[in-house]
Amino acid sequence: MPSTFTKTFDTPAYKGTVTIPLGLYINGEFVDPVEGGTIDVVNPATGKVVTSIAAGTKADIDIAAKAAKKAYKTSWGLKVPGAQRGKLMSKLAVLMGEHIEEFAALDALANGKAYNTAYGRDNKGAIAVMEYYAGWADKINGKTIETNENKLAYTRHEPIGVVGQIIPWNVPMFSLSLKIAPALATGNTIVLKPSELTPLSALLFCTLIEEAGFPPGVINIVNGYGPTAGQAISEHPLIEKVAFTGSTLTGRKIMEAAAKSNLKPVTLELGGKSPNIIFDDADLEQAVKWAIHGIYFNHGQNCSAGSRIFVQESIYEKFLDQFTEKARAIKVGDPFSPDTYQGPQVSKTQFERIMGYITSGKNDGATVHLGGKQIGQEGYFIEPTIFTECQPDMKIVREEIFGPVACVMKFNTEDEVVEQANDTSYGLAASVFTKDIDRAIRVAHALEAGTAWINCANQTEISMPFGGFKQSGIGRELSEYALENYTNVKAVHVNIGIRL
Image (tube, rainbow, N blue to C red; front, side, top):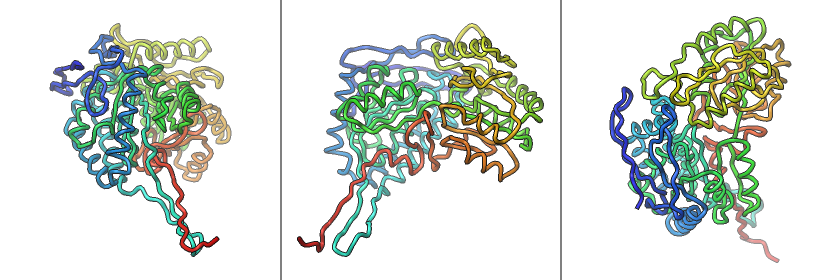
């Protein structure tokens, strides 16, 4: 019988007690892992272990996949009309809303993000995504296609079956909802692996699934490490599709495993090195504020972070002065303090990775204009950092850092900056700041990115697709487009008069 974890929070942002089971959630119940292992969950604000969760392995993924397959064949999929699926999803969204404070507290505890961000953006967003796709559940339609008078031809958009999903640690509950909701709406059953760094909110979510009315086996959540549980999801023969958000390196491994097993289709939302282009006619005050949000939101641990900031030379010094002032004023500290904007990085490994990039930037000749150091001796806090005098071939310019590190560079002409912005293996997002609408749209269209923001940054909408070009991924999440990831299109030809 799995143990439970109880945490009493007595903080300025949240006061309350949360209890969650620590086992694997398979076939409608919490169970111990076959091999009996555990994973420590660490509070990144202190570096201390909070609790230990059950660690699933290949054997547990196999059990979960078989439970999901049985549920798909007997109590979900085409056995349950879309309208009924939508009702259950709406009920689940209501339950998530009733526990939003607990979700936010668990994410702030394990991730280190500010509680207000976890509450107001991540978890409110997760609920909104679940509600949005609940509305789509009875609108998964095919088409009747005109051919000739002797044939009825139409298409059906059928669920794929059992889908595997692997989510990241930077926005735990939003990522969970982003994956689960469209898969449920289209009638699939699920085997999902949360990040081993931030599993607590997913375990709380599991306690709501049965209460919402979902049959056993429809949603299975198995914590574990990527090389074991994640690999098992990617290569399991009963899992007929896999969706992953994370690094490009891991995305390649998932594609390889999917191809070598049952050639399952993949959806990948991967890394980014997003350009933020600021022309000399931009509203400078607003451009500075958006640039701050673009790179330092979520501690810089954001796949679409605007980490390459290109500023037209005539306003470079003025922009840099104002940007530096705003960055210096960022409140870094306790995630449960109401005025904290930036908490600790998520783990010691991530902290050391970011500090390694800062060292690399210095060694390559870039100038640390601001920050670049650890804050305090406890936890994984890093100063908001600005590099200047950056060159295109530097690691800090070319590779995703995934931390609070900005590279601010000069440019002269539009053609020059578009070429520089596109000189990357990534293509997730980009921002353009200018009052010239012709130039804004022209540059947005020229940028090789799945999302282009004009006079804003990091502004996603549930009804708009999100995904990358080049090595930033395959497929789209959010909006109606995400539903395409979870259906097979069947063409049906009905002979009503053709004679041989």
